[in-house]
Length: 322
Image 1 (cartoon, rainbow, N blue to C red):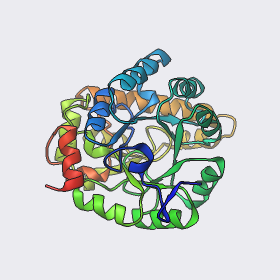
Image 2 (cartoon, helix red, strand yellow; image 1 turned 60 degrees about the vertical axis):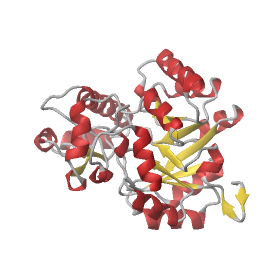
Image 3 (cartoon, rainbow, N blue to C red; image 1 turned 90 degrees about the vertical axis):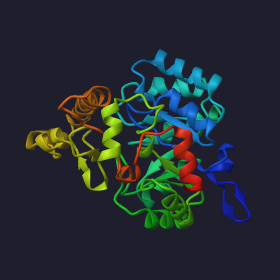
Image 4 (tube, one colour; image 1 turned 30 degrees about the vertical axis):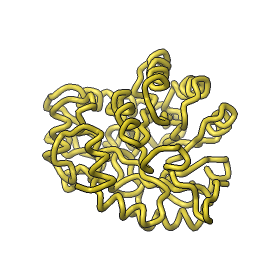
């Protein structure tokens, strides 16, 4: 059960002790320690996917750096299904070094919640519907991240307002909304639907602290919501990307063989892992080098990105307007 203040669910700002109720969402191959530190200095909380670090020692070093330099709580995102072969070691490191919270994605968070709570670490779980939200609440999740149909990466099927209201009616833990926030008006609107906080990612790609290529950042400035398409080519799970010439060339749907292998019970786990690994290699190339073969993840909120700016400025404009 969540802590209640004046009969309202605890806000994200109250949960984490931050100035504004915002998590800078964990973005694969995009989030880095410099971004998380800058987010903390700007009054919000940053997070990073554990898979942004190729080895466990690199993950340990990053968490240690953030413990020393980040002035605000921060989180680590874990892919908790079988495609992530490093999951158990990543979870152990997060618990040993006591990150402030873990965000779980793409699998059952049961083991994560049990281990994290034993270590005094909060767990927020990505959800896209009420049924799954109730399951993770029953397992002890501290909050749910409501991934709506405007989210970047692995988007959900429902609009923000509908999803937030359904989850608030069905669950007793805070609902953090993910997707569709790129400016001050949208920030206020989503909070007015009853969200305890916001998870915001795509607009931070075009930040000075971000370490991706200049071309990726400029794509977030020059492309808009109409240029975002869903693809299953990268991870086997629908994922939003910018419709570059390369994406147009390769298409966005798995071919018949890929679909068949993905449905085979014996081969499914290994094929998903292969698809995930192969797709992540393409993303890695796209994130850090400017070539024709570019696959850049982003959500429709890049419509609001007009320039490459420091994270502090992005946060200031989000919460206080221009």
